[in-house]
Image (cartoon, rainbow, N blue to C red; front, top):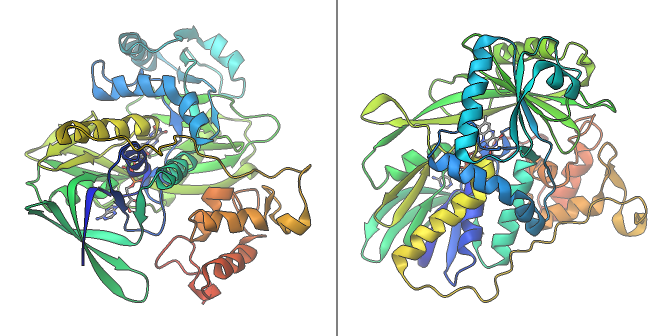
Length: 478
Ligand SMILES: Cc1cc2nc3c(=O)[nH]c(=O)nc-3n(C[C@H](O)[C@H](O)[C@H](O)COP(=O)(O)OP(=O)(O)OC[C@H]3O[C@@H](n4cnc5c(N)ncnc54)[C@H](O)[C@@H]3O)c2cc1C
């Protein structure tokens, strides 16, 4: 059977979710096809979660314009979606003349880009603001508007809002082929539910390709290759912050020698993320961590935060960077956001930093482009941009008869909150983690994972052996 729709969005990372939300404001039949079991399981879960101020981007670029605009809208967006956001500010610090020069250039870019409240401060001032940083800072660029957000929380919120406004999300459906048809683009997907493969066919008037690391491959199903992707690996360390926060703002470390700049980012749940390294990954997107990269990060941490308590190291994670280049000239790296506009298809290719910051604006941009192509489109009269977030744990309201036992003692997550997360779309242990933070505290799931597996099995009506950590191939109980 062929299903006819107006819009197909390929990929339910943060960009697909925000594109879906933007289309849900119109009276259009929109579906999202996602090859995995949940939203935001790839790059959108493996990043630094910084809402950038906008001084890092080349003046006049789409990136620069969207970043400054998106940053200024972030409180409103997060209020609509019920997502916490912390405008903590940032310091870009240098320890010598090369770093100082780079900071001056960024200050100039920031001015040209219209970044508000951006100023150069002395090393001493920076050291007062962040006393735990290694001594000897020569200059610092202070950006008051930098913030942090939990990236998957934002993506999940956009997904829930788009879904409640009528967008249909189809998980475990990988787009395998696209061909031009009389009515639009004919797409074939295979859905692997773990037991059998099923093929589905759709005809979409327009396709939005938000396939992340695979966006260029998906575009090549129908159009000639013009943009190539060079995949590299990024690694991070996660520390627990004590009463005395190690740093209370985002800190960008501008290296003196030619090296990767590294970042320290405090998170909303009192963690500190340090990263990201960049190294080769055999040109494959990989989310694995690498011993050498992690050791480099450990040594960086010891150097930049000499008093940091090493026992507060909680976890590590890896992510994949899709680095776009001109296919005909691999030395031509494409640093701006790449939006390939083809017949009936728009592709967001190799959207790296600051894709989280700009997800809302990028979603609106692609929707506007399609609405312009279609011409007149009625608005969705039931559209509501407000998403009601799940209730957080409250000691005062806790009632064991209603809420069930506390399953995650580190982060105070009850059985009811976990069951509610399954109803909202979680199908894996990591899906529960991302929605409730159960298992993300000090014990990293050692105390609660077994109980979570049982609740998942019960809610999904599957055996505990079928419960996975993070989708197909990651069962835990044999
Ligand atoms: C190391 C790193 C750090 C970053 N830090 C920041 C930051 O601090 N701040 C910031 O603003 N931005 C940051 N970014 C950028 C941001 O994370 C990305 O721009 C954003 O997450 C990209 O989202 P996406 O939806 O394109 O990709 P993804 O999240 O990877 O989603 C793509 C989806 O498409 C699906 N898919 C792929 N192929 C198919 C197919 N054939 N059929 C169906 N589905 C398919 C995948 O399963 C996946 O779910 C960072 C990026 C990296 C790599």
